[in-house]
Amino acid sequence: MTIVGNSLHSNDDDAIQVDAFLSRAGGLSQSVNISNNTIDGTSDNGVQMALHIYSAGSPSTASVTVSGNSISNTGDHGIYISTRVSNATLVEPSVLISNNTLNDIGEDGILLSNQAGTFGTLSQTITINDNTLSFVGYDGIKVRTTASGTGRCCRRT
Image 1 (cartoon, helix red, strand yellow):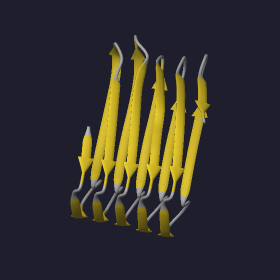
Image 2 (cartoon, one colour):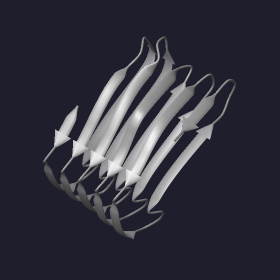
Image 3 (cartoon, rainbow, N blue to C red):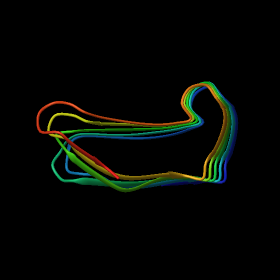
Image 4 (spheres, rainbow, N blue to C red):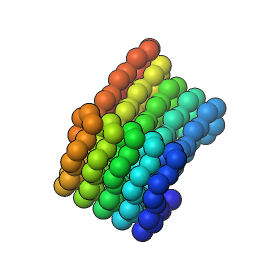
């Protein structure tokens, strides 16, 4: 999926939202590129992505790029990526957040929230570089990873 070169102004919710939920199915392969968009004014997140996998029979893979975006005047986070895995395996060989400009952000500038639940395996390679953040309400960049339940595993590089 590619979302490139859009201008979004005065949104009542997330300006860009990409969600994938998989439950009791085979597996998922996904590539998402959100680049060179202008977002000004949203009551929620500038960019929100969610990948939640529960009880997948085959390992899943996903690559994410959020790059070159200008995000300003958000009520919540500038960039928010949520990953959840339970009874499944997810490999994200590339999560790249780079060259974004974030200004006047209500909560965290960049928030990655990762969770491996019971029998969940999550492996990620995360790169966050060359972003410019100013006037951020909470943390500029926050990466939160939790593992809970039986047989869970998280690997982050």
